Length: 304
Image 1 (cartoon, rainbow, N blue to C red):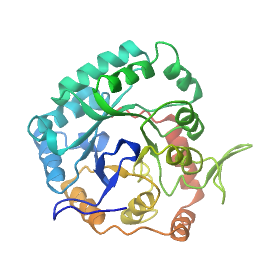
Image 2 (image 1 turned 30 degrees about the horizontal axis):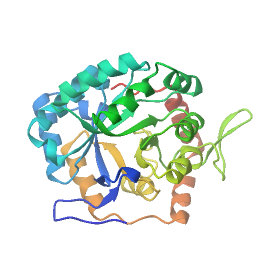
Image 3 (image 1 turned 90 degrees about the vertical axis):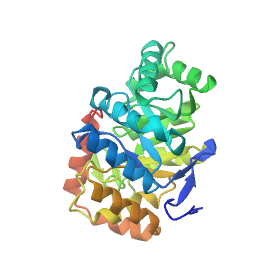
Image 4 (image 1 turned 120 degrees about the vertical axis):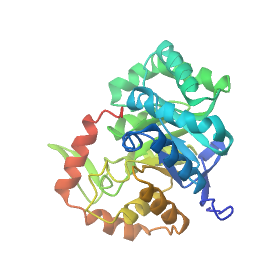
């Protein structure tokens, strides 16, 4: 259920079983945040977003080799209590993850984050390393027990099968996955990925139902397909598509102040698309564009 709290507050949802209330729109602090180039402009943009009620902030240890966390940290030094803060850790061993967590907290000027994600699950082989004895998952369970984080999760844009397995096998509180109208009806068939009416190879069909069943907090990302869906459909419709799924929020990169304002306005006036409207939107996107985006995400390194 959506609620609205005050003139600046955006509609909010519960981040699954964590119980954390979050705005339906999050501030993505990856490559689009780094497009501000100058620290002063980036800090001003994030402050403006928070002023408009975009109080879920998503960053990562590896974004800009730490620059994103440092810029976010400049804001957290004075506004930490206003924000639900999430960061992501790329290390695959427990020791490496512990070092990265310590450095991330230092950069962010805090002693804890609300959400800590294992960053960018690549495939089933990568999942084996994550779950192995001495793997990153050990450090994440520790961090949750020590209250360094309230919730642990895992992100993925490359392999729905691997994410489905990760969510089924492990005790995650939340997850962040690629959910957009272009990926919705993709299926892994003999000869490769194809767009099909069933779309049983997509994150939406494979991983999302597991997360819903386990009452996880669900963050939609790559809503615009790393800009590859621009021109295929209106931005407003693409964001509405993902927000109409059973997600807690969407995390969106906003490289210009006008994007922040437009997306905040969209969130304020959000109305869900029906299943029929979502299908119509997905079917309107050319198959060639869908396949190109799928191939891009298979090999995309989410480090900036």
